[in-house]
Length: 465
Image (tube, rainbow, N blue to C red; front, side, top):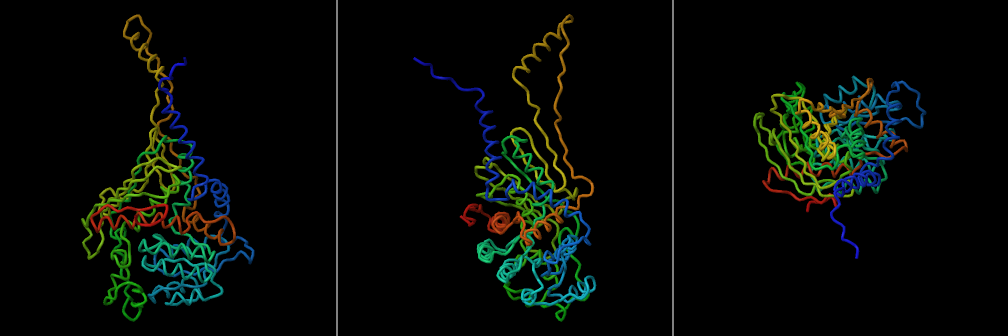
């Protein structure tokens, strides 16, 4: 008669190792950014992105670019895009004449208009940057894709979760290139964190946290109101678009993030970056349960959204990660200010991740037999004639990975990826499906806050549950 085998003391460790191997294998086929393609693309991107803006590009590879929404983010995108060889700004659209004047002064004889449809009708426009307030993101992106233009849309991809599937359909049906502008997706920091996670550097993930700290007027969206702004120089009705009709108010135009009709608060502005990075690193589709708390603690300037927001998110077990919990916070009243990172915590260590560095911290593993030997030697050391305790070599408990000098930044790489896809190269890493899975939990966080309830989200079907 054979004996029934007893419990295997090595089973938990082997189970963790098996899970980590599963993570690495599953990440390659996950519906998020494909790992195998990514490393090769990044090597190419780093070489090409360092070329001078005057580099020679074949005429067939030149891309006519337009910006729709020529404010701070839109024109920052233009400045970045023009650092990449072969990109030419040909048109700008904005509802404020002062911005159109500034665009012509800086970029010469480009076409300018208040009506974005005139931009989309132009044959010399191959791609557009959608840098408008959030409530215009979906409709302009859909129109651009259907007009055969590639679209780079600033995050969040949509103003309302219900808008997401219309944009998914437009991308699929048009076949045009669409990318969401969370530039951390293309950062060296995220790449390294993904590599370390898939190699099992922190063991089994169980918790993650991220935060964004600010403590200044501009960081809290108190942008200056242009002296030339008036009902004559601002196309108020075109600004409102699908939003409710209200009297002209320059604060709503130039500080639109403060108002729910046009913006998505700190969650839509900043949580989306953290979701994008996390989902990329661990190949996740998103959480299933969202809760939130917070308040308006300092910037009482008429804004309709909190300046302190904390979100809690439950992630289910999948083929690429175990079940884990995520906490996110944004604080616009942070006296320490300036700190931003994402931390992943596992059974064997943790990673602090930014777009330019990763700090890996490891637990000091102790072998049971080694601990027994050390105890015996310590006992002997207690005897005046005994041997002294033997000190052993320890691996480093903290490893710091930082970008090399000369790195131009995640935004350059993100735009480079976009334009390479427009030229027929590898697909973008943040398409409409990925963008919705990053935006929806942030927007659901707003729902949880304003409705004071837990919100359920189906990350596979990409719908509220």
